[in-house]
Image (cartoon, rainbow, N blue to C red):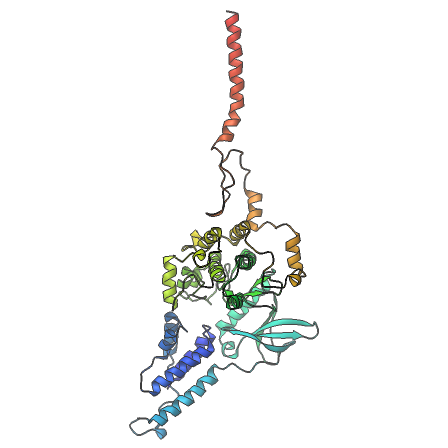
Length: 478
């Protein structure tokens, strides 16, 4: 039967690492059945074999649980013989009881009916850091999303600090392409810590992949360009996301993409003990190799890599580095080679292949160095749909953000504004190459030093002319 430590491991796999609750229960039942058949089963290895935990995560849990590995159930001699042997009926009973106990450990607490000033209408989703509910405030006639820290984490100070950090990040950011933070509070009656967020009434980008298989080039670039603008805002405030993926991109009914879930975000100007020195936080299919090795190495270029993997998934319906477990995926990323998107989706143009190659460079220095550079490249490609095809066009045109974009000329990105402010004017003959990456045509190329030659050509001509005049004067007056 499963020990108390193993049941605790199952619960932590869900709460700490975001493993799918239903699949963990299936793994537990399979382990119990194997044990009932007399097989020796390592439950953590079972979770690894089913891709619910990475080997490093399983080892981390094993080290933590070894300190307090006590089977509180112990041998039940009243149900067994003196030699400790058990009958098939006994083993079946143990399996059933252990399954019930595990069900109790893993099942979430009852959904609240009210949190603070908000009435809870229904659950929207669930993740490693808590459940998200649709809330309604009667006084303001306002729908909101409310993220509640679960009880099993509320006693863990590290998770409380992480929850509070996520709330602060949301409240610190104000951008149309980032889910807006409204408040963070603790319910006075239940003591539940929660954050109140903007409610986005639309699907995630991953739900669109599930619905359509893959998106058109225009729709995919539109979504990623929106998120790049949100990242530009976040990075300018020293906040990096560290978990960019289709599940964390929400779409409004008018087609505006918003970045959600700042649970793994960190501030570059703060020291935090929440990320272990050798821990790799993020989603294996999307995060870059350096983040898989050590989450503390992640910076803005890591977000750009993950956004590139997201764009690839939107365009092709496949992740760029598939694999059966995090180690296999990381090894493929270390090689840096992936199938070009155009090979899987012929409608993807070469310029987009080039953008993807630079977004997902093996080393951070090989990528776009800022979100602003990426925005410039995507805008110059002219591939983004003005309004995505999967939304109601008339409804989209009623959105003030959409109308403003369509009626106003593009605003300069931070990169463009900086270049206009700081870059010295180019001389007329200076060799220019205004591309940010391979694939954008060169604007012009003029002979090197042509401007310098023009600067001294006129004085030289005047000098030569004066010399000829002097020679003629002396010749006729000799």
